[in-house]
Image (tube, rainbow, N blue to C red; front, side, top):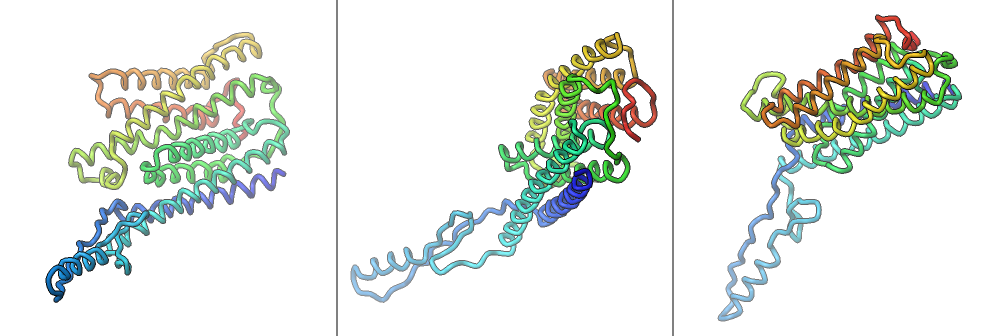
Length: 341
């Protein structure tokens, strides 16, 4: 079962890569929202006599008037050839929805890999860095699919999200992989499920939230007339206001979960080590993350604070989450040293 999990996760990574390529194709083909209008009605000049001419003209005009089909493409009774711009738009849309489908397939395979890993380990698959990164990335991509289902117009953000997924899952496989081992004694508690599950969900939402935060900064700069790199990358992204709202919604949902996770961790620490808080490296960086995310929400709710400042706080918060995940486990020793490397 462990080997099956490894293979499925590898396939999921390749599917995410294909999804990213499909998103890139859509992005490269340009603006898919080409306005398509029906061709003007053509009037037949008849040679009929008297009132017959008017009726013939009306009939001819009616028979040749263009109509717009359900797919938004103009046509006539006999069919109208698409313009080059319209054909490009259709190809871009097709590539975009193929990318979405591939992302869904990748997420399904990702879930299968996690479930089979848990079955093989006979526990929840959160016992080391490899498993934690896999779970957090799955929560991120699952949340993205929910967002896309609710707001399809954000689809082009998928290029950046799938890029993050490929990097994270590939890093987990190539750098962080750890064979299945039993949990250390300190983790054999029901608090393992309570505490770590909320950390995983919050981290996955923070991961997803960092993507629109970063792209918002690029898009906002582009809308202000900046045409240098990296602002030109945002030319075809959704409007800055939409990206900023998505950033806020995701962080507003994730922050209470993260707060509960910190509190649950303190309760668990009291039961396991006899003290609720000891400024262990992971505890310290969790507190730093909490303060920064609280600062983001406060800045977002304060009218005098610019949206750019709030977005930078959101990005800084996720950088501290990455530090807590990678830096603390790799470079520090403490009671939370369960990285498995």
